[in-house]
Length: 394
Image 1 (cartoon, rainbow, N blue to C red):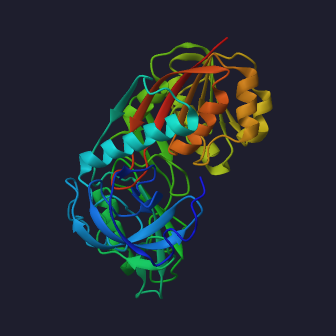
Image 2: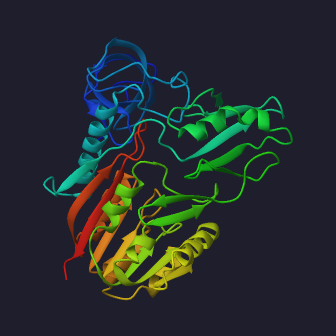
């Protein structure tokens, strides 16, 4: 639908009420028939807005004044929230965040993916604070006088932080004291990851900063990784995430694509006679292989290859395929291969409801969607993880 541009132009001010949150965490309001997306708003808020962007079918706006707060709005606990881009929902009560995010994800799956509203699902929550095991910091300045923090919302301007209550406490302490450690060079970006024992590793490697490998136990397995390697960030929900993906299915052969360091592949190897794990990142692939060897999983093969190029080797009709692709979802090539080769069971983990909806719609002619699990792995942000279990129609 195209709405005439003279209805709500940039810099116009309007008074609205926020209806709900949409996928990603913005609030949705309407004025003169125009949908308006509003960051940092809460359902039920009555607001005075200024239009900052106008498109043919919608507008974006910023809050000028809160006329009346919605029932779930609160004062954001973090002193940096007004400017820092790391969090987007601290102004909404914790349990309400999850409820609205799940509602928005369900609507996205129904609208874009034609997912039936009665597909069985469940919601999993964990700690809302001090949960993150990893962080990506931004820095600027000179040794001894560096600023450490995160980009401002919708900007590349650095917001220096004195605290960050979504980080696990040892990681928060490290971040707060980081500037004093940088006495040789100040990188523009620094990754840091936390292990079970409180050990921290950083990348790039710099004098005076911890380096090397850390590890974390999830269920029966221990996973090693470093700051350069992707690993799920919510300390308290790793076990439930693995259970939601792996489940109780058993069989002959399972394939774990985009396997990372083996979070799903290792427990799959307890339930299938053979597991093949495919990971394109060379560093993650090295940890994947080492983690499998240290776990004594002789029935697990690791392949260091991009899924997009390897997928032609997937046999037809295998028992199980697990995919946990990057945020943008499955490529057209991978989707086509899965439709053509029809594994008996397909498990899809996604942190992007719209990408998942697109892929589920494309797969619908070959697979039936059995269940969904929504896991709030990213409290205080607009993101949510979804695990979809599918079964081949043939």
